[in-house]
Length: 595
Image (cartoon, rainbow, N blue to C red; front, side, top):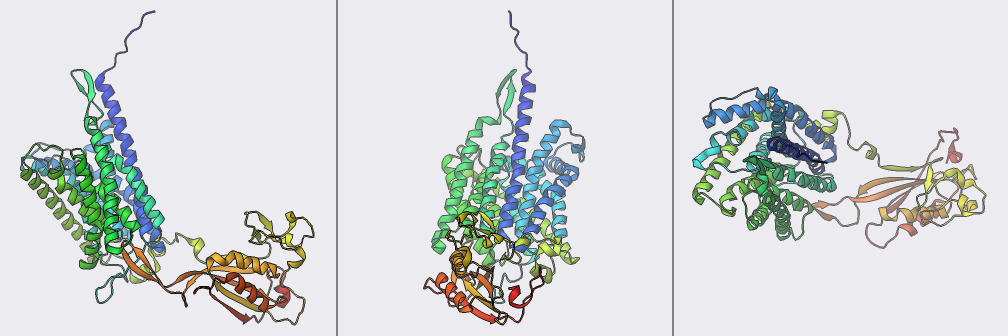
């Protein structure tokens, strides 16, 4: 049996694998939007979470369509006109074909990354229509001008004879987005309550550090698509044979990206420790991202030691730059987009000639080209962003009203609440509700009337101790002349289980529990948000309300006091008030019988 060699065109194979690689990393970069959504939602107040998530959704949805119809063509036009090219196709994307559309999509995920960065800076006060308007203009003109000048073969591609170096968008995407965010935040002004009349700042913590850190890790995962994915050609064809394309340096890109990421977190946490005596979690997370931004312009040329240095510096500058923006410039950059993306992007681009493993041009020339590129991109971004938000301010469409800002953008802009189930914060234990034992087994409240002798049919207290069925009763009707009283106790949350057990043991199992906060003799504490301390004088407590008729209020007071006491300030207080009347909704019973 003879075999015949399979004839494969190397060019076709290379093209197919290269297109597949680009699509895979494109999808990975798209997933970064989930990270941005979580990161930004975690750093805003709970009343603005839905608004922030909506902005992220619309950034992609609207921006990618605009970039397809207009932005990609503008980039081609700017590159051709400023680079001395012969021609361009303003609407060439519409008929680009399969390979051209893959290339367009790869560029689109970069464009939308730049756009979504801005949303974090203007959180909590920008009108949705203002943000959407800016997103449209950024996707159509502002960002395409930058890519046309650089990756599109424009003026900066050959500036000073060496060209502006930006491998994966450290300055073109992240630096541009961070500078745009800072400019937009300046034009909008700070959130209500962010600064006092004397210029001092107030800390406004975000609502979920968990979201912020998880969003950071999702972004870091997607970043490998950003940097490693930019080595877009796996194979090339030379003399009819397959050879490695850009993948001949992909190992360096992966290595420098990872080292800079780690050093960014180390640098930010170290400076935070020096400034406050504590390692700030949010600074550590933001520093990790700043390290990634710092290396993104130069991961293909940087030496291993250069990646360590760039990452460390990008992370270390974060707390310093954020404090400068907040306290000196008085700009309310909610999600710290400028120190994370803006200044870190600038730092990485300018560091190129100093950390390169090999430099084929004079250091001074290479540095000068980087300075020109950074200055031109920053200047264009600042002017264009200021004009857009300035015009929005003139027509009164830049930010929400003070009333809507205080109410929260979730309600005023979208008519929703991100956490509606926490509005009342109550945990009711009424007739017919299941009683949870410590083991999690739900026991129907009606089983309290059971006369079975085995524990399987008996009510279990929170401590897991069976309570004799005869001792467990509702607080009803033995003496119709008995007064109805409400015992209200404010206790530590961790003592709730002990109190519930104590009340069940004296025959007063019915109660209502509410999560509350307050202050009394318990000393205030200090919290920390992005390295800055703020006073926490409202402590988390649990309010227990127990209405009794045939059980003595004194017995209830003694049971609560004994179970809730720790001997430390903050144990709480107990109040007793008379109840004029009561009505059981299901049966219509009134007075003590209703209790």
